[in-house]
Image (tube, rainbow, N blue to C red; front, side, top):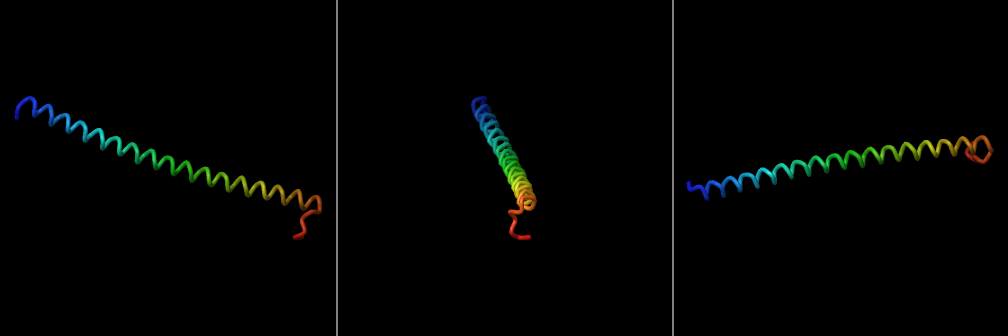
Length: 68
């Protein structure tokens, strides 16, 4: 194999390794984004439940809750 062929081969290897590494990083980024989204949705649901609970307490205390 000539020096030119060897350099070309090594460049191809480096390109392939870089693409593989980039793909792995993208997968990690997607997983992190999905995890963050799940966490935010869970936090939002908790906040909504707490707000509803607080509103129910106010309704109960003021007599506006017609369910009791």
